[in-house]
Length: 218
Length: 218
DNA sequence: AATTATATTTAGATTTGCCTAAAATTTAAT
DNA sequence: ATTAAATTTTAGGCAAATCTAAATATAATT
Ligand SMILES: [Mn+2]
Ligand SMILES: [Mn+2]
Ligand SMILES: [Mn+2]
Ligand SMILES: [Mn+2]
Image (tube, rainbow over all chains, first blue to last red; front, side):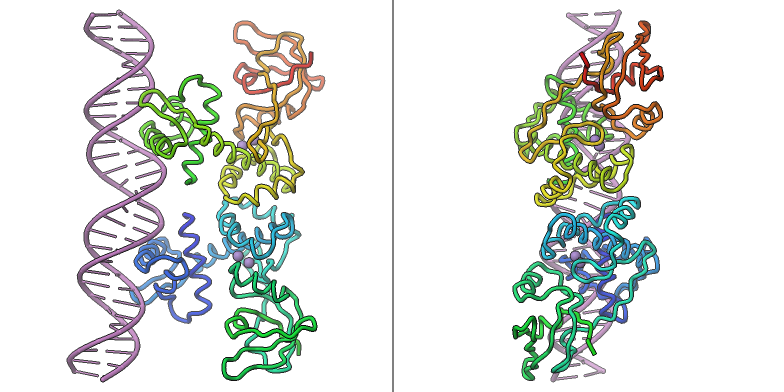
């Protein structure tokens, strides 16, 4: 499997969480920052190789095989992110791009030994669960911050957007993994939220609260 | 620079040690396990990009720029080999192929932090010197074991052939980095050597002694 | 139901890296 | 100095991954 094929599989895997039927070509193209025609070509190749099923105009669905392959790549990505943060002094907002490269290194032994070396972590620096060697993901009851009601409390458990700009924004607001927070007010007209964090009240847009996962404390 | 371009630069760098004029196309092709025609194509591209100078039929010579790029890749290769052996329990005879992949990861910060994490090592698990961030190599007065005379003693400091089969052969003979040895006899007709290592006498072919570097103890 | 708009696919090109076979050049041997 | 052998280059093609522009299918409007 080529590097590009792996990236497409990963993209489809992530998108399947948001699409009940097949994942549309356009969604895949957007995720891969490429054109729909390129996506079509690659989807056909991956279908040919039995990594996904595909009917023209009906989108793509990963096969069991494709899902397994995607999860392997995601496992490596998240393990490397742990390594960079915990061993090499990287900040959590600067690991993603390097992990995008490291996730394609092919060596079962390397992945296994890295996992062992890191103490078999279950979550990456962004709170995302790390699949084990068999592809099993730890259970994860995540809820969007935007789903909390006024006066509800929660603990930050992850983020939907892994981009450096969003993570830097969070750092500036003093929001990190396991940060405790309380919703003090929801502005009805634009759904923006006032949140109490470490004795400071901060205002978060709906766009922001949609991308923050919390464990409801109730 | 593409992954393939980096590998060619590295190949030319290593070959320049054995060729006083330009490195012949055939030598590059052989090192890259490809055909002379492919090598010609790539040499032209690298010359176009000013990584090497090239006159048809006269072979290739790295420019200062090309040499710098090659050394950067070699630095990463050897640092990763240290990491695999010292942190991830790899055996020295199984790190090369994985390092061939890892050496292409692009991140100045990663290389620098890895170097720091490993304690700024100066030699890799095979005894090869690791260039520093500026491309400077530690001085290295290596001599082939085959150059020693009868009754001379030496300390093993590195190997020319990094292949798994050769390293496994060395392990079997109990030869490793810093192993002390003494030449007890040289068979004149085929230049094979009898060497005393840890109170055992073993016979080594010329092919073997040409690939073992020692520091003469005299 | 017909029309318009959107999504998707196909057609035709481009770049990188590789291949084989044939031509050209350099080197070695008669 | 010719001829023969080895090396190197050129010519022509192929597969992966991408692109733009045009054609086709599906979805939304009137
Ligand atoms: Mn990431
Ligand atoms: Mn992550
Ligand atoms: Mn190596
Ligand atoms: Mn080495």
